[in-house]
Image (cartoon, rainbow, N blue to C red; front, side):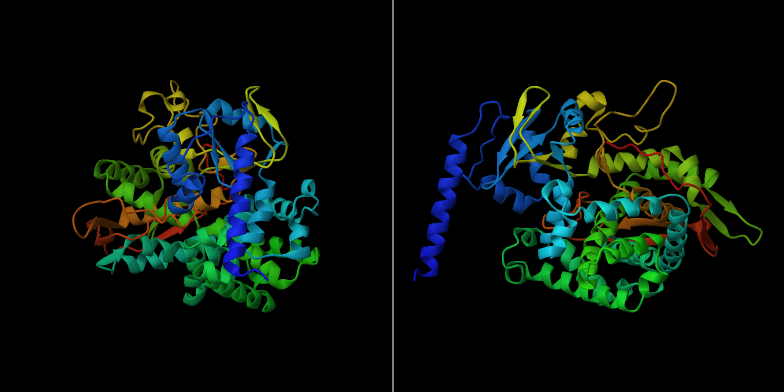
Amino acid sequence: MLDVSRLLLLGLVAGLLYVLHRRQSRDPREPPLVSSRIPLIGHLVGLLWHGLPYFDMVTAKHPHPICTLDLVFSKSYLVTSPPLVQAVQRNRKSLSFDPFVSMTLERMAGIRGPVLEQFREKESGGQGLGHDVVHAMQPTLSGRGLDVMNERMAQMLRPRLDELVRLPTIDLFDWCRRVITAASTDASYGPLNPYQDPRVEDAFWDFESHMSPLLANFLPWLTARTAWKGREAAVAALVKYYELGGHEEGSELTYVRWKTMHDAGVPTEDIARQEVSMAIGLLSNSVPATFWVLYDLYSRPDLLAEIRAEVREHAMRVDADQRHIVDISALRDQCPLLLSTFQEILRTRSVSAPTRFVLQDVLLADQYLLKAGGVLNMPAASVGRTTETWGSTADEFDPRRFIKSENKNPRRTGGFMTFGVSPVICPGRHFACSEILALAVMMVLRVDVTPVDGVWRVPPMNAQAITSSMRPPKEGIAVRVTPCQDSEGVEWDFEVKAGTGAFNLMVG
């Protein structure tokens, strides 16, 4: 019997021969190949080390409209030109997001065997349950279902903000993480929310923030132990939640997800696994986005003063009991500078890279051959900052960029991809925007925030949190909290008026 070292050597040789064969068989019509400093494995190492920003690092050095990266056992095509993004959108059957769903359930959630085949898309031989779950969710994320979630979210934010004014210092990112996690999960899961347990909350963030090695899917309990242990703890908590009937008292969103899977015969443990992966969509971008909104507002005092004045005039009222009430719907409809600034922060901070799988050979824009089995990525930081899209100010922070006027239409096809690229757009974007802006506005009206050391420094990014496109920091920022003079001794509250809850947001 061969020993382990010989088996590993044979595996390495076989892999090398495969890579060399594929390189020799490369079609000249494919996008130009970008070499790496480390032969063969350089791009794979770079992606694992830097996370999603690695795509932008590559395209900054090699400004092609589209290029090819060799990731050892797969090819990644990077699209950085808005016209080519539109060409991708026109090839929906050949370039599909659907396989990403089943890959996520297998590698992130740990779903295996027949249940995974239930979720797998029909085009790949599965039963399409993943698509059914997404379809069932969509009506609950607008109209009355969204209003109810916003009301619950606002109820959770208010006491946390009341506590904030009594705290002399906080770690800004950690505080955002705690508050957004509590508000989002309570709004979704209701009174029996499993994330109310700090141990479950911490387990989820261990899972989310150490995701990179888990995706290799090789002995995850050993090679990705922190993420694996966090995931399994969160799954166990969700199983208990369903056994106690928590979904019966949760949001419509949580209930329809459970019912769609339950009616399809999915075991409770696998429903819980899918639900833990859904929490990534609920929290993974909302937390760092909240952090960056606060960072970019407080580090720009003049802009902060303008937004405070706009909100006070158009979205805040004082009732008969002298309570100061912030109208969340008015933030959406009557505060154009706030909404434009929010989108500009997303544009400049996002490192999203919307993904499509190449299901069959396709000639993109009648020029570039994409081979079946490859993966296509559209790095938002590259596409979203092209002068072709945004003109000479593409690299500048312009808080009024998204304000529409008679002489200005801010919409740019294919130029804003924080929420994805049509037809795959984040269904929870309206809830996330309500939550982020409600927290940020109430905070800027009530307190001033300054770094303890007096300087706003950009923290390093956590490259292992690869499910987040909003640059979650690897370490926090200690800030000093000072109540605003005109807010002390005042009772504050939110109100949520009935409606669609839909923000006028730009999407790709």
